[in-house]
Length: 296
Image: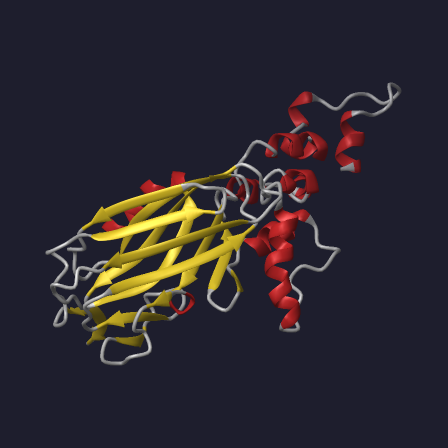
């Protein structure tokens, strides 16, 4: 910053450099950083490659602090606690804000079956809970459920339902969510997929019973918010995000508890052939992004 600053603001005894010779590299880092403040993280990273001034400005703490959630300290404390128990520390005290942002964009695990991260492009908070972290009725009985290893899950395994009369999947999470509006989804698929001769194939042998009655998805929060949706599960071979409901966080200084469930408890018929991957909590503005993912 000093060299660029001195070139533009030299003493009156030194002749000013011709305007034609000044370029972006002559801008003071403080001015560049003030502009970067209004850009998204990917744009900041691209501009950092322009020259030394932009590279230096892109490391300014106040630039990256504006991209972090206001309660990022509470988020770090929550996920770092599990890291300390396992003997690793991803967030030493001397980290700059850019590195904190970068590390929070990598999924962090806690409570055995939950991952949290910041979306790289927007800095928005995301959370997912694996099927191992859910309470699934009958999961211990191999006549009904089994665990499948798959690369199609960020947790590398899913719960597979062969056949059951009473379907009930429950879960809860308590976390210091950053302020904002969130949507909760169940990621499900009818049929079990595998690779054959390098191609993805879906076995629908056990798929039945989902066209008779809809599945009910519910959520409730510790501050009294509730949501309920119902829909039929009828698209085999595709991972679908089924929307359970929305909730809002106004006070990020305290943890919020979110309880959720998926049920189909009409015992007049059996149902089967369902893969349960995970539950996602995404910013509500990501709904369109999830629809695009399902179309691919």
